[in-house]
Each structure stands twice: as C-alpha cells, then as structure tokens.
Length: 152
Image (cartoon, rainbow, N blue to C red; front, side):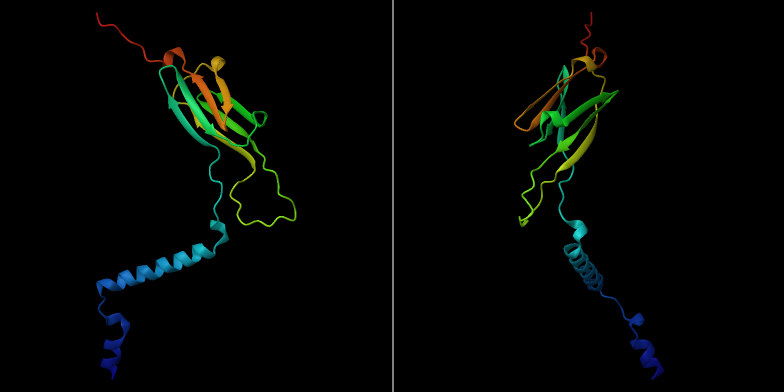
C-alpha cells in the first residue's frame, strides 16, 4: 500500500512534452480573459501628434498630423537641437443627453519634443499648416550642410 501511494503521486509521473504546451495554453487563455475584462486596456489616442522628420540638402522637415487644431492653439519653440511642439486639441462635446457608443478621439493638451539631427538656423525657420498637416522647415546651419571639396 505504501509503494502504491508513493508511485502514484503526481511527483513521480513522467511528463509528456505536450504537458508543457497544455500548461502554456492555459496560461495564455487566462491572460486573454484578463485583458478582455480589464478596463485599463481600453484603446487610447496614443502618441499625438504623429510626426515625420525628413531632410533634404538644405532643410530638415517636420510634418505633424494635427487635424482640428487651430494655428493659434499651437506653440513651437526651438532650443539647441530640440524642437518643442505643444498645443491643445479641442473637440465639441455632444451634450449631456448623448449616449456614447465609441470614443477614440481625445481632446486636451499635448506636447512633443523632437530632436533635430544637426544644427539649424533658428532665424529662418518657417511653419505652415494645410489640410490638418503642420509643416515646419528648419534650414540647416552652414556648418551642418554637406560641402563639396574639389580635388585638384
């Protein structure tokens, strides 16, 4: 009787390679249930605004998607090799009697800090907005522009 109890306990059972897969499947199912029921994992607006930084021979270009934001609600500041873009996105509230079905667009203040790859001429920076896209031209400083050297 003692031998049968010792040999039939789960500790002496040989594990199949599929036992670990079954355990992993159970943990993944638990994780999925947890994430589905957790209100902390609701979708949010994410990083706003979305930004592209490119360059050509004379300028660095920053383009930001800011639909619905007015120019007077934006503030641009350049300090050394960083450009600060901040502002506020305002969205009209539908009213107290409205029933929400989905809310993905967020209102509020935002701020982004963008590192500029090299020195720029701060006196010649130009910014404009069209169709919800903010375009900023940052002219490269003379020391940052590539120079052609004649071999002679």
